[in-house]
Length: 266
Image (cartoon, rainbow, N blue to C red; front, side, top):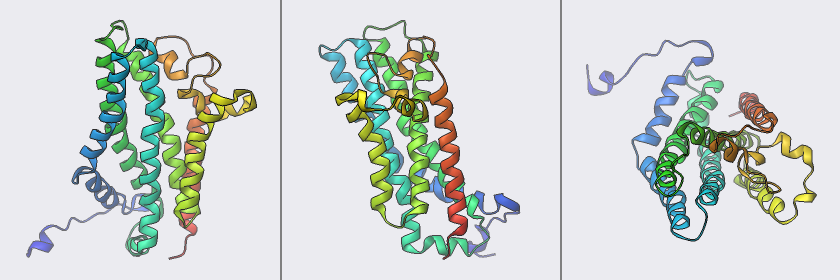
C-alpha cells in the first residue's frame, strides 16, 4: 500500500449526508489548520476587547461601556462573516471548484451545510465565545461584579443570533448572484443602514420592521436597552417576537440557498 492509498478513508454515508463528512473536513481544515483562526481571534480581541478596555479607562459608565461592547460585537463580527461567507460560495463558483466537487459523490445539500456548520462554529469560537469571556472579566473586574455569567451568556447568544442572520443571508445571496457586489451590498446595507437610520431618524423606521428583523437584539431604541442588555442585567424581555423572527429568517435563508444550489448548472 503506497502513501496515497493509506490516507484514503472510505465514506459510506447515503442520502443527504453523502459527502458531508469530507466537505466538513475540508472546511474545518481551512479554519483550524491555517492562520485564519488565530488571526480572527486577534482581530476580535483588538477591536472588541481593546475598545472596551479604552472605554472602561475613560469617563464612560461601566454599564454603557458593556452596552457599547455588545453593539460593536453586533457590527464587527458580522462584517467579517459576510465577507468570508459570500466568498466561500462565490470563490468556488468562480474558480470552478464547485463544479469539480459536484462531479464527485457529494449532495448539494451537504455542500451548503458544510459551509454553514464550519463558518458558524468558527465565528462562534473566534468572534463570540473568546471576546465574550474576556469582556465578562473586564466588566466584572471594573465596577460591575454583580453581572451574572448566565445573563451575560444570554447577551452573547443575541450577538451570535444576530451573526447567524447575516451569515446565512450572505450564503443565500452568494447562491442567487454570481457577483460579489449584490451579495456584499445587500448584507452590509441591512447591517449598517438600520444603525444609521435608527440613530438619526428613528421615527422613519416602521415599527413592524423592528419586530421582524434582528435590529432590536443589539441596537438600543428610544432609550430602551437592546435585548442583549435586558439579558445581561437579568431583566425580562419585553417580547420574543424578534428572536423567533430571526430564527425563522435564518432557516429561510438556508432553505433558499439549498434550493438555489440544487438548480445551479455547472
